[in-house]
Length: 84
Image 1 (tube, rainbow, N blue to C red):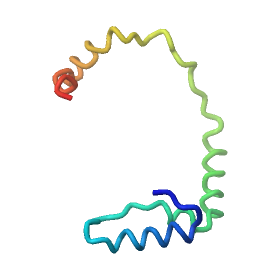
Image 2: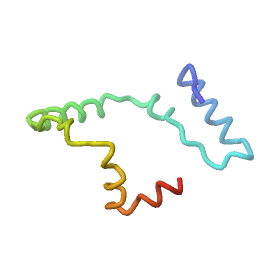
Image 3: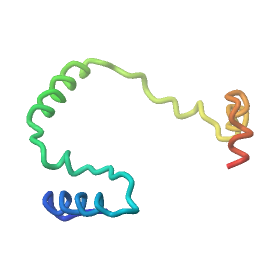
Image 4: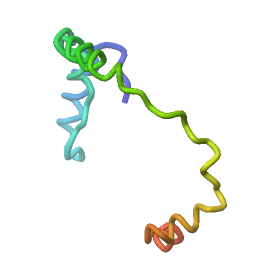
């Protein structure tokens, strides 16, 4: 479900939790109501720490779709994919 405000999200969550057919509610509303200042500071520190990490260029030529069944067999997953 989608709510238009933090208050509506909290109200919907409370209402849905009371329904007898509902066993559990996973809501993101708690992330909307908390103060993000401390988390944003930590994210800033992490960004500074990892900014010097360099990654190799992406190898777009190495993957071939026709090789996918061989990869799946090697991983032991081919039969599982056929069952799905």
